[in-house]
Length: 265
Image (cartoon, rainbow, N blue to C red; front, side, top):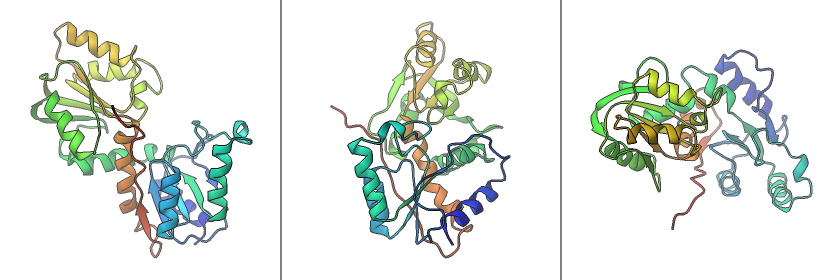
């Protein structure tokens, strides 16, 4: 089965409407290349590419960009040493990279949340829709500790009081906590669903962060737990392997962890 046949089978299984504009594109390689193995990952970093080579896999399915911008634009990189050396590594080892982002989120249920719920065992608490949960009564500090352990987070940030009582949790993975369609949508989610804490990937300090900070300073039961983009989404790529295997019998499918990019002092 070649790259095109693999991708076509995945797209057909998603059963999502045709997308006029999408970042789900072949970012490197050749559609006609026979697939020897697949690696799923949050991001096709150099170490992930090297891991795919070691595993004998020549198709990397990545969720996030390969070339440092949201749309993987490369016109600004043509003379860039980082880009050129990355391309050399890909070309010499005949590695193909296909980005699987939009259709993962449009799939029902969202495949990133599917993996997150499995890892946390939170499907049992999920309210209608993908992003709100009714959990046994706990505190922000306990939720943060639980997420840090389950998702292997090096550092968790909290806005609000650590002892805030928690029964209703919202989760906005990746960049969705920035407000995809409007800056105010994460705050509206908290307000309209009476959430005690919102767990998120990324923040802007003057939008959601400021809203929750003011709420906490006013004595309201509101808090924010910030995991980072990678830590909130990568687990979805881990469990994508389970979704892919029945679709692609005979092709080895592995997960390669990109990991969060930070070290902490």
